[in-house]
Amino acid sequence: MGGLLDERVVLETIFNNYDTDGKGNLSPIQMQILHGDLRMGGISLPQVMESMKYACIHGSYCEPSELYNLLQEMDRRFFLIQDFRWEFSMIDVNHKDTISQDEAQWFVQTVHGRHFSKKKWDEFVKCRPVPGSPVAFAEIEVMLCNIPNRLDLQSEKMEEEKEREDRMRRERLAEEEVARLKKKRDEERRRQDEEQKRNEELRRKRQLEDEERRKQEEEERRRREEEEESERLRELEKKQREEEERRRKEEEELYKDVEKLAKDAEEKEKKTKEELDKLKNKGGSEEEAKRLRKRLQDERHRKLRYNLKVAIKSRDRYQLDYNITEFKKEKLEDTDMDLVKAEKILKELLVRDDLKRAMTKRELEELEKAINAIKKHGLEVPLAKELGEASKLLTRLKRLERIRHEILELKQATVAEIRSYQNPPAVVHKVMTATFLLLGHQEKETKIWKSVQALVGKTGKESLKRRCIECKPEKIPVAPAKRAKALLEEFDLEEVRDVSAGAATFYVWASAMIEELEDLTAQKEEAKAKAS
Image (cartoon, rainbow, N blue to C red):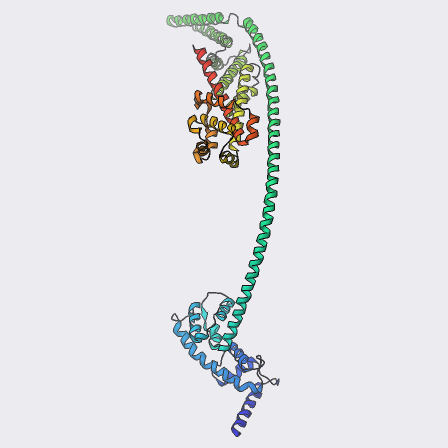
């Protein structure tokens, strides 16, 4: 009895010594100081706080009656820490005072054994400032000493079970909600798809109508422009005929005897040169030689002037070029304005030749450049006939280019529409047969629609669009072109367009290629006739 009384008195004395503020309880820091005075080094503040949670009712401070139990708990942790620190140092083979996170988990799991709580460990890892970084002893010392008991584990399992049941219930409710929402979405999607399909059909119908109206307006505009241009060119041709008649009469008057005069001038130049040579051989006077040289120069200048007039009258490109060069080399004064006239005629001939060359090559860009050169140099009247032919060719080439552009812009869905036919309308089959005839295929290859489908479905260099764009009319043989024309003549464009917009595009392309080939063939025959 006396021993217990003495122990109580000692504890009260110790308590009072550290209760410096007289509150009747000790804070964690005061307990850390007290225990540190009893055990060298004591334990860390987190360990003190964990001890108070275990031994004290309030958990955040210690009352006098709780001091003994609290000291015992703190001692337990003190001695455990000594062992754990030694074991930690054994794991820390690199002596960095840290171990890896996996090693720390293994250490805690080994200490707790079957009472190890994976949940608490995951919470610890989640709360770390830098997840995955090396672990210091101070981070896990409290966890090492807090060995969970069976009741804690049962409570944790019950909590996990409850969480699992709640999760399953939430998942079930979520699945039901998802199913409900999916059903609702599917119904809404079906409704929207039907609505979209109706709208798409209406939009496509309007688009086709708008496109057709736009094409008609564009075609009408082009037709008016072509008519206006044709009328303008007819006026120019009329002026050209009048100008040629006026020029002819003028040249008859101005250059009537220029050939004879040029020949006389050349003879006089020759005689004067012979006289000068004789004088040099005889050793005549310098004054006479000077007079003859002056006359020789005058005769040469007169010859050059008449030669330039002859070139103007002949309108020969090479003769003009040579005589203009000679005239300029002598720096003669253009008193009769023959040099200006000759240069104008030469420019006209050069531009005309460029135009003919561009028409022969049938290149759109080069032909436009040649036509613009005529307009730039004000030669529309003298070259009205050639300009009219070039304008007609330009119109055809532009149309062919527009058709190529339409092929290029042809949507894959439109091509797919042609390919999607299982039993195509006759108009579609025949248009595609004509198209592939022009692209070099035999008609027998297109008799079966599946073969046409295979050709339409090719991609890359063999794609239908690319082959149409790269196709040159001059490379198409005449015989298959005639057969293709016969197939196309069974229908008109409106009839084809009513059945298939895609087939209509290839109908226009094939018709244009045939027209261009016929024009080229006619030109070749005309050239042969002229040559013969």
